[in-house]
Length: 222
Image 1 (tube, helix red, strand yellow):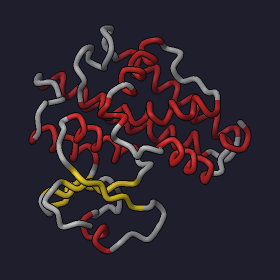
Image 2 (image 1 turned 180 degrees about the vertical axis):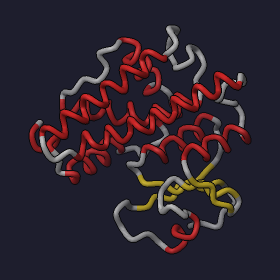
Image 3 (image 1 turned 90 degrees about the vertical axis):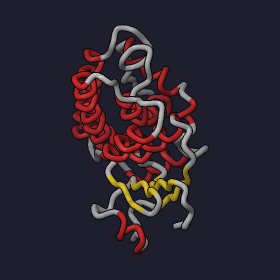
């Protein structure tokens, strides 16, 4: 890891939680460096020292590590403009709660990819779709974002999910965006430069390598 005083984001290339932090940094136009590690391998000692849970992302701020994606997002929003959380405490609490739903849906998407049999795949697919339908009911009627016109931290939290679903839909002919509001929201998020620039340039290739390596029902039967 570099000794530079710039912010350093420690990440896996395929980690959606790390992508959240990268989106926020991009949106706020904050200079940072990224240190990519390989998932599933024995991690270097310096990483074990800064990540008590052994997970990414970790944001190193002038030598001080901040871990857990939700905490990193809150820190960045307190320190750097523009503020992406709404000012109203109730609206902020509501959106924080929906950010937890996004984290849950990451798990459903992971299960969709890694399920070894049709039953597990179908269950994950149904759970993921049901979760998206619940989110659709919470979206503002005004497009394009969760709140309507303003891009918020809750949008940051969901964007990595739609990046991955977009690839899965294209490659495997799936469709999780039958709800027009979800489709419009997804399109708006994927069109953001901060989202596009939050992953490596060959992210689709990297993600599909992960999918194929998972050797699940999805890649073997669809």
